Image (cartoon, rainbow, N blue to C red):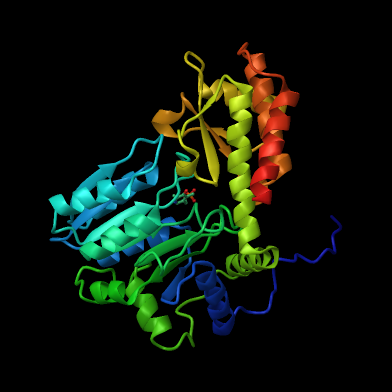
Length: 375
Ligand SMILES: *Cc1c(COP(=O)(O)O)cnc(C)c1O
């Protein structure tokens, strides 16, 4: 870099209210919602926590569906709002079905709020939100959905599925920034939030502040200085998806899932953690380490063979037994998936685990990629 190179992230023209609203509209279109959206100036945990604290109060009964670590976090917030929490947990090897939700709603007719994660990058599963949404809507509870790991990786039909509070972030399949995140808020959800004395007000967690200071004024004046660089990056991420075609981006993620699972089955040694492909998230494939071999050692050996591949060990208690092959955003590519499989094969061989010939694995995985893309 030369001394007179202008820093290109500085001294930009200010991001005005019109620009901010335009980015919000692009994200709303991507989420398939005509309800209002609020783009909060923080990572996706901000609108997730804001949604729960805004809609839930003492006396609420919440159904919290736990299919991974984010669901566990929601349970803590729900309890801290004074809600009684009913928990439905799915094994991390599959999805939760609408029947389990219907049964919980029948057993606890007082449930007025349901929190659900669409896809979990951490556990590699994805839940049937269309079916679950129907059951929740029939019961009458509000539905909050964490769609951070599903937006742009698989269909997300916010309004059609009856999602009242839908949260997305740009950092996964959108290949965008992590620093701003959008939540859609249905008219039903606003009613509930406005009636909640305990909903945050004059707070960074407040959806009502955004309503009063931004939405109700016709999005004419921003409530505070916007996170300009993050908003511009979010817009570029949305524009790139629009240019490539959302269906094409989703297909790349589905192909990455299919090729990874097929490649692993050809490889041997490891097995997909999520049993059925239909329950497996297109955003990341989780793998079970062979008995007696620590997943962290496999990841370290694979990264020693190729440090550029998006592999990591599972989080927390899963670290010993789970490997995560991330294939979201730019990593949802044929080359990256094949490189991840090559690195895993090399790593397993280093540790003395018998696996198939790498060429055979890549041929099977590549063929599956092509099948999914041509479907
Ligand atoms: C990735 C992800 C988030 C965002 O969390 P980070 O801490 O930014 O990784 C939220 N929810 C789900 C389901 C995710 O997969």
